[in-house]
Picture 1 (cartoon, rainbow, N blue to C red):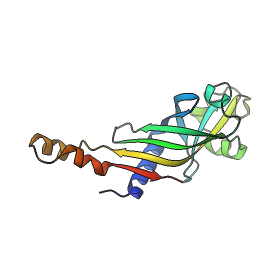
Picture 2 (picture 1 turned 180 degrees about the horizontal axis):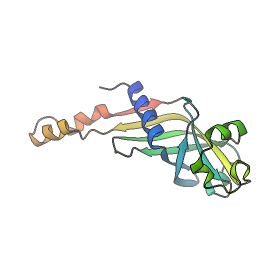
Picture 3 (picture 1 turned 90 degrees about the vertical axis):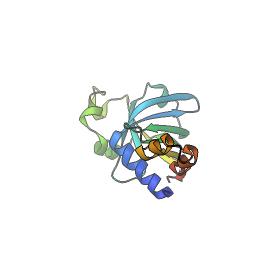
Length: 159
């Protein structure tokens, strides 16, 4: 059975690789955003524009939800945390790249540019339990697939 540290490690490796997640607030439906990372910090950053519903709702930090599905569907997560605007220029300089630049005609000085900071708190992480071995066991009538899946979900503190 994997321990919570293994779930946490797999989550961070996966989201850092895929870089796309859905982020929402209690009053804003989740929307897809591209994740940015500053070194090994357990914080997720997103560039957006000031006129998006998400940015307009953040006059102060708010509780938020990040929903993530790995491209290979081998990991899924729902992460609770806090979302806030963090327009630290040094941080923007470090995270800036040509993909972000394509969205902002004024570059790093574009007046609509907003950098959002998601500080995760707790996550429920699911690892894919539909392995070849599980499939063969189910085909042969061996084992209980519900029991096999119990070891593939964990609630993890990501602080």
